[in-house]
Amino acid sequence: MDVIEDQEPYEGRFDVRISSHQAVMNIIQENQRFKEENQRLKAQNADLIARLKEKEKIDEIIKEDSEMHTRYWQRDEHTRFLAALQMYGEKDIKAIAQHVGSRSTTQVRTHAQKYFMKLGKLGKSLPSRSGLSHQPSPTGGDGPKDPAGKEG
Image (cartoon, rainbow, N blue to C red):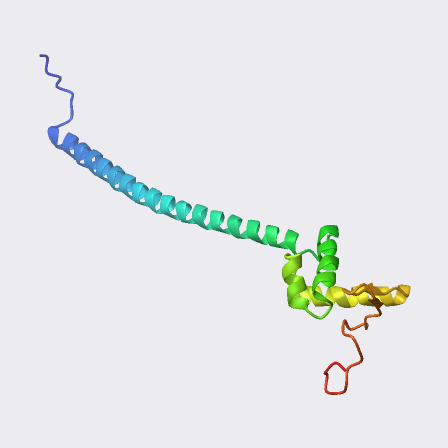
């Protein structure tokens, strides 16, 4: 081998090797930090995906519920309401609501009140279960209420 006399002394090269070694160590440490950050972000992403899926499930339930309980009564709901009126009478709101199936007792009571008021305006009456028709009161009861709030 030929020896080149113009080369720098060995000490200078050692300094370069130390700084190169330090640079490699810095890169290794930075790589480790990136790996840890990547793991943390993966866990955070998995948590967000799980939360999003849960929210989508809840949104679907709300959508189905809102479709079932829309403000306006569907034709089939009103038909079940009328059938229940014939079967249970106008006072058994709980049984009517159970028969309708998609409305609460409060919604059924309100619907009945509006329905009876409409019948009254049109001068029509609700056929009774016995076949005889009678005129329901606008409040859904059979008669006027006394001051204590009880039906008379």
